[in-house]
Image (cartoon, rainbow, N blue to C red; front, side, top):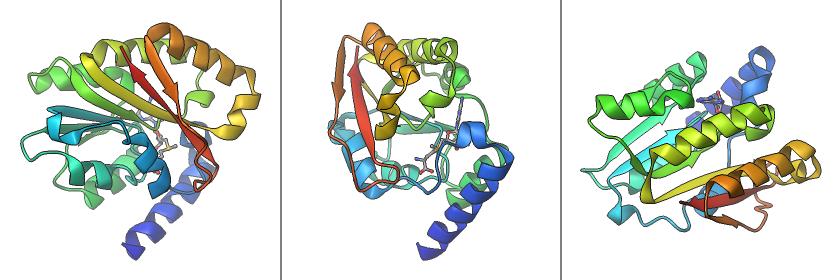
Amino acid sequence: MENDRVNSQLLILKELIFSPKNMSMVVPSTQSLFLEMIRHIDFSDVDTVVELGPGTGSFTRDISGRINDDADFLALEVNTRMHRYLTKRFPQLDIINDDARNVQKYLAMRNKTQADVIISSIPWMSLTIREQIELLKIIHATLSSDGIFVTYSYAHTKLFRIHRQFKTVVKRKFSNVRESRVIWKNFPPAFVYVCRK
Ligand SMILES: C[S@@+](CC[C@H](N)C(=O)[O-])C[C@H]1O[C@@H](n2cnc3c(N)ncnc32)[C@H](O)[C@@H]1O
């Protein structure tokens, strides 16, 4: 556990130097943020779970511990070094080195069309508005009709126009969007969007 923490931190520091755009974190997300992310998810009733941008796997470990043995779990991490780290850390899990935009291809390869739960750590604020719209459209199409999509954003980004744009796009796409309280026990402090179709 302590080893995982140290290795995750070292990898984040390295990636902040080599690919800062997609990283958008300085330390792994905390358990407090994870618990807020999954607060409205009933894992006992879930058949397919997708994680987008798992990073160092701080959520991955806890998600995989909660899903049923017969449920499918699939994660897409675009960063090759992060992916290599994740596959070493979780050799038993289905973690793919590709862009979240290709999620439907990988579900189809597993004879699935949709997911009941989509948990995303995609750094939305580093995407252009066009990229945000494109990915949210794919996520919406991938989510089952009674599914749940959760994602987070850092609290300080609320000050920026790109965040207001993101919020507008999310609310346009999903009919039911809830914003959580700020999780101060995360660095940086963050809040969660819980979205349903
Ligand atoms: C904020 S970090 C992940 C935080 C994670 N909860 C943790 O604690 O490690 C965002 C991750 O999303 C990945 N990412 C960014 N854009 C992506 C995309 N389009 N598809 C898949 N992964 C992406 C980055 O490589 C990075 O690992």
